[in-house]
Length: 208
Image (cartoon, rainbow, N blue to C red; front, side, top):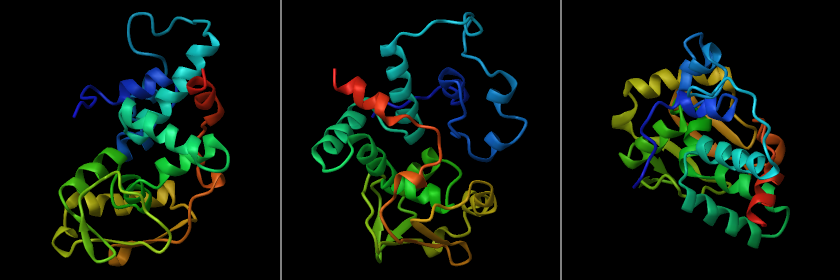
């Protein structure tokens, strides 16, 4: 599967804000966006007037890169969101939030969504008593997620537990870090997504 393999900090600089793709590093002075808050490349410092289409495209790319999904996957999420009842933009964000890799990141068992995705693929988690290995699985209220016994001493999990206090755990989830467990209490709401996202721009882009 095609994945972005270059420096992740370039993505934050390209989108003009932190996407928190490098875990704890994003909260320190080592963050590349803090040092160079402009787009990469020779013309990165130049001010450019963006068209409406460019603004919509950048918003879509920002959200897609933040959640770590490919273009084809993202379009399928949009089509699914559009077919659901309610506000399409909100539905899209809810589907992305309910991905298993995102939930594990939100619960504080990984420093980033990318790291969470890799850990899920390696079978380091159990959901409702069954081992899971598909990062795109959709969680639902009542689901119980737990780190497998043999994976609890993995350094990255221990580090992530120390960092979660900086970003907090959303209200729709309940994290029990001491026992390496987490529970999905409810479906996410728009208020649970604090990151600055204008989902209406994405809807306008795909509606053309």
